[in-house]
Length: 82
Image (cartoon, rainbow, N blue to C red):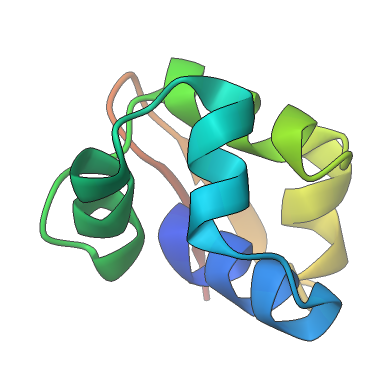
């Protein structure tokens, strides 16, 4: 599972809007939308900002949706893989 999928699942289940995240992070709405849809790679810095905006620890965000699979993070996009 990719980082944007983990984040989207979390914000949908909590009823948080992308506009709210954009305001809290300073990430432009269009860029945020592209990252969350997978059209643009999500830098780790933005992943951390988004996690903080929704008040979730980045490590917790990944491990909560990990389902026992390994977590892979590289310099561009954190990923959870099976």
